[in-house]
Image 1 (tube, rainbow, N blue to C red):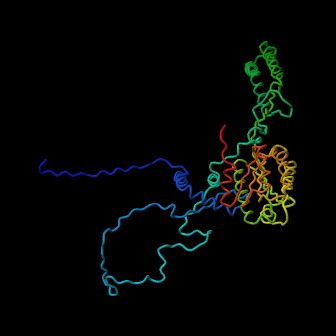
Image 2: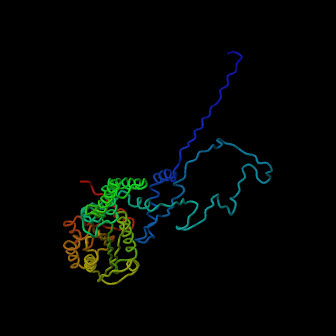
Image 3: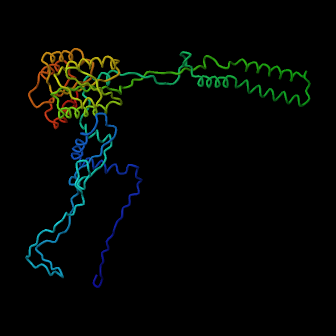
Length: 434
C-alpha cells in the first residue's frame, strides 16, 4: 500500500541434537578416516613391519603418513588484478629496485630435520589397534581352503554340563539337588498328615484345659490319632532312590585353536643377509596370517646347510654357515619333530621353506620323495619360496612335481623384497567357492 514500508526479517533456525552419545562417539569419524586414507595407511603398515620380530604381533602399530596426503583443501579470497602499494617511511628503495634475498631465511615451517624414525612436521602419526593393523595387512586374504582336517572336518570334544539325570554312576550324584528333591517330596507326601497332627494336638490341649479326664473317650481317641500320625510321618523315608539326581555331561565339539608353524631356511654361504631378510619378512607374514585363525601358535625354526638343526629365532636369522646344501636333512628333522611333538592330531601344521634353490642334484630327488610320501599327508599347508634372481634351480624343478600329487603344496619365486607381499597374496589368496 502507498505510504507503507515492508521489512523482511530473516528467521534463523537452530537445530540442537540432544541424543545421548556412547563411549565410542568418535568411532564413526575414525572409520571414515581409515576408509578415506586406506592406500596411505596400507603403505605405512608395510613399512612398519620391517623391524618386527616374527612373534611380535600382540599390539597395534603407530604409523605415520605425510601431511600432504591428509590435508584438506582450503579456499580464500585473494586480491586480483595488478596493484601497487606505497609504504610510508620508505627511504631506501624506489620503484623498480632489486635486492637480494635476506641471509639466514628459513621459511615458515617449524619442522626439524629428522630421520625415518623421527616424527617431523610433515608427518601425521596415529595408532592402529591390533585388529586394524592385521585387517589392513591381510585384507582380502583367508586361510587356504585346502584339507584343514583339524580345523573344519575333524574336531575334538570337551565335556559340558547339561542338566541332571535320574540315573547314573554314584560318583556323579549331585548331593544338593538330591536333598532338595527329597525335601520337596517329604513336604508333599506328609503335608496332609502334618496338618491333621497339628489340629489334633490343639484339640487335645483344649480338652485337657476344660478338665476332661484321661479316661475320656475323646482324649483317648486324640492320643491314638496323634500316635498314628507321628508313626505315619516317621515312616516317610528321608531320601528315596526316586530323589537321586545325577549330573549329566555331554560332549560338545570344540574347534581346534592351536597350530604349529615350521620355518625352514637355508643358511649356507649362498644365502646372504639380503636373502635372509627377505625370508624373514615372508615368515612374519605367515605368522601374522595364522594368528588370525588360531589362539596358540608354536613356531619351530629349522636351519640347514649340509646338516639341519633346530635353533631359536636369533640364531635362525643371524648365523651364517659355509659349505654345501643338503635340503633333505631339514625335511627329515621336520618329519621327526612332527611325529614326536605334534603327532597326536591336535595340531594344525603349516610349513614355510625359504631357499635360493641351490642343492645337490641327487638330494633334490630325495626331497621330492620325502614330501610326496611322508610329509605332505601330515601338514595342512606347505609353502616354498625360492629367493633368487636367476633361473630356477634343481630344487625348484623337483618341487614342481609335488603339486601334481598334493593340492596343499604351493611354491613361488621371489626376486626382490618388493615381491614378498604379492607372492604371499598369491599363495594364500581366497579360494573360489565350489
